[in-house]
Image (cartoon, rainbow, N blue to C red; front, side, top):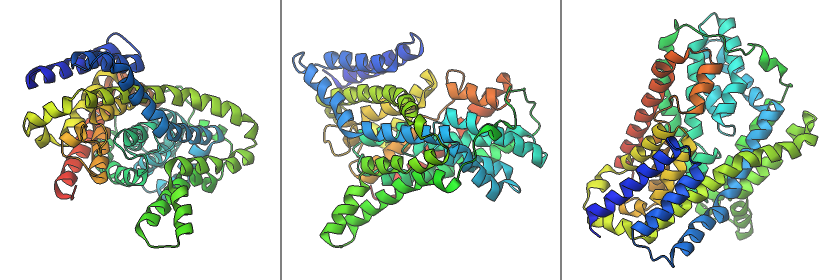
Length: 450
């Protein structure tokens, strides 16, 4: 099979997957899995080997990153149900809100969406923005856009949000989440700079009645901000200790304990346990069963979509596709991080889900340590390089939010933005954020020793 025919088959498979999800409304799990099996057959993997390739790709996700996704989703659900997300928002508002309401809402969104899905975060926190706008005598639209940007940035870049967590696992960084969190924090905050000024342009934009009470956040039970911050800060501290144990000479037993606590699955499990005082204080410990059930309903589809992506990645590796790419010259290598950015952006724009765009793209890239992966073909063979690849995928997955994205309608609906104004506000803002992020990531890839 020639290089050109292989590339055309791969491109056609991606187009088929996009059309199946966006036009034919096939569930992403079936669309990605079906595309992987079809691609395996077309790229010449022996039929007798295809079941083993499917099993390897599918099972790898469950042995690696599935528990991390579940624990991260559970923490987010607890913070939603107990009012912890609102407590986080109120804490930031008290520090920043009076003088800089737009900055306050952006930071609130950025913090809240680390454990909480951006859609839920906007619904929970937008009433605070409206009441803040009323008290400060400003238009609520800039505050709503700033909140939307802050939520979206951490949603696509920072674990334990399921998308970035899944991508980290797929590229081989499941035990190095601290690196992904650190880079994600930097890139997401920098991408918010133009969004901050962009949101400020719409102070005179007309609003619609969203149907939500500006004081609806008062319905949330009072909650300790310290207890709400604990499940976010604790896993980061534990993972940092795990990294220190591998870098600094210390007694062997101490290093073993730090290494154990620093494993992402252990760190997030302990973070989930740290939610128990929050549940007890709010007298919601009896609701933990329902919270867990709801969280598993949310995490389940994400895990299965990620597993289907794992099959796609295994097919790409087993088919020898990467060898063909290597032989085709340096054209793709020259694109570097822009290549996964473009794939993720196409998937995001076509079908709307950032999580699907992230997991599908990451599955194609494969693990940085695998000589047969796309990652290796592009020259990204170190943990830092893999983390930059995750960032590039996240940047693509925010480019752009429009009418096929549920978050677009959450922001316009609950934010009081007229639907006809959604494209020149939300859509254009996410385009600016995505372009800014990939420019920064490409610059980092050019100057860092990867």
